[in-house]
Image 1: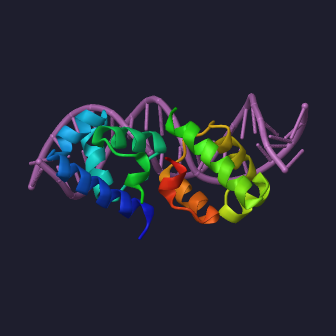
Image 2 (image 1 turned 90 degrees about the vertical axis):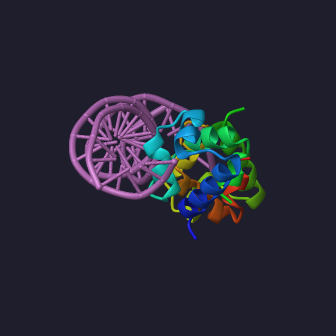
Length: 67
Length: 67
DNA sequence: ATGTGACTACTAGTCCGTA
DNA sequence: TTACGGACTAGTAGTCACA
């Protein structure tokens, strides 16, 4: 399983745990809503600064999104 | 400390642990030598696919490079 | 053996929609 | 509420010559 797929599964799981919609998550992370959708479908290859923003919004370590 | 700085320190530490030069590490990761230099100076904002290649070359989890 | 500026091709990331 | 498309701009990937 490649890293984009792992990220996509982790994102969806953590977001559901928080009880947020993609849109709410996107706002909290300061990222566009369509981009979150793309990420959860494994359709994008984000930079590490995006990973950090996602991780902070979810209150997890950046590394936890990739493992 | 931001994520790029953490990456840069982690890369340098793991590379030294392996006893490799930047050039040798670059070859093993399939990345250009000057790009590795940039990464270790925190001068780039890489994508997660680059992180994965670096992690594989170092035999560590991708997440370990970001934490 | 490493740091740096410069460069082009390509993609990350945004914003507008519709189903 | 989410997937997906088109179009756009900002920024990265990847390389080189040189210090």
